[in-house]
Image (cartoon, rainbow, N blue to C red; front, side, top):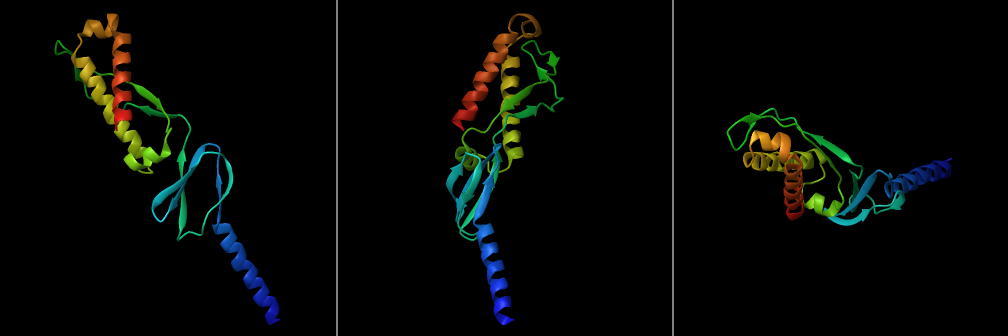
Amino acid sequence: MNKIGFLISSLLVALALASSMLFVVDQRQFGVLFQLGQIKQVVTEPGLNFKLPPPFQNVSYIDKRLLTLESNDTEPTLTAEKQRVVIDWYVRWRISDPQAYIRNVGLNEAAGALQLNRVVRNSFQQEVNKRTLKELLNTQREQLMADVKREVLEAVRGA
C-alpha cells in the first residue's frame, strides 16, 4: 500500500513539474519568455513551447492584433485665428516589436495606449494651431492628416 501511495504522489509531482514547464502561445499573442527578469526570447509562432520551472523562467503575453485607440478628449484646440475646434480621431495600432515595447512601455497595453494618446493629441494640437478654420475644413484637411501621421510615426519610432 505504501508503494502505491508513493507511486501516485511521485506521479502527481512529476505532472505538476511537467505542466509548469509547458506554455501555449495563441495565434493572437506574442509569448515573452523572461529569465530572471530579463527577456530571453519572444515567441511569435503559435503552439506548445517549453521553459524552465517558474522561479527560473516566466511567460507573459502581449496582444499582436490590430488595436484601436479613440480620442476621449473634449477639450477644444485653437486654430491659427484663435477659433476653438474639437477634433475626434481614432488610431489603429499594433505592437510589432515586443522587446522594444516592453523596454519603453512595459507589459501593460493600456500604458502604451495612454502614451500614444498623448502623442496623437499633441500632434493634432500643433498642426491645428498652424491652420485657419477654413483650411482645416476645406483645403488642407488631407495635408493635416498626413502631417499628423508623419509626426506620430516619428515620435513613436524615435521613442
